[in-house]
Length: 286
Picture 1: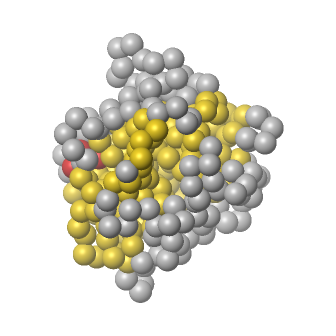
Picture 2: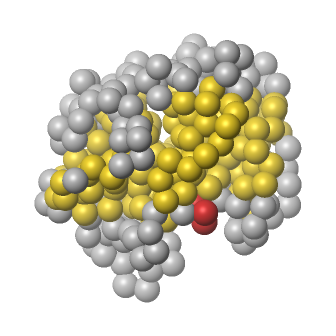
């Protein structure tokens, strides 16, 4: 295992309350990320430094590119679409009092796997649901507390998932029809090291996980062995994604919510240049 503590740069200095969801959009050469509790979707172009900001009408837990242009959003009350002409419409609206959308990921088949959680983080109050482009919804997991990182192995045969309070990164087998089965732990985060939040999978099939209250991002091999730790000065690291033209830079979102004396970089978008080699992520087929 290797450990490093000074290999990151600040991509965007920001005071996001709950920065989350970094996603590389190859069609635009920009990184998408968001501030959930301030209902903001950010973009960042590393080639020019240009940034944009969009405000949403609800708390937004995830944003992903769509195959035909535009964006798909995991919002408080369901799944929304922003069309290429910048208009908004609902794909699937299902408001549940006290619940909001959280992290989401696009599967190899182009479906969106979107998580939810209760604002009070009540045990079992969240879900993980698969959405297809026509708005069909299929509940995959219905006893989730804080649905977070989801990702697939490069060959699409495994899915990784974190329900944050369990401290586990779980792995599933992916069946021929894209469903999942045989859930088991890949890795367990030890007491005092934080909680697994967002995750991504690299070209070697290794799983990177951001550690909430752990001040680090970790890399686990497909066998579940810890082989790299990048230590960071901000305690609440929320998610990670590979980006840049060659998918070699690891972008990290961070949060300042709940911190009495947040670090000056808490809420910023950080990047670890040359961290590895990522896998191109599919766009939502809807």
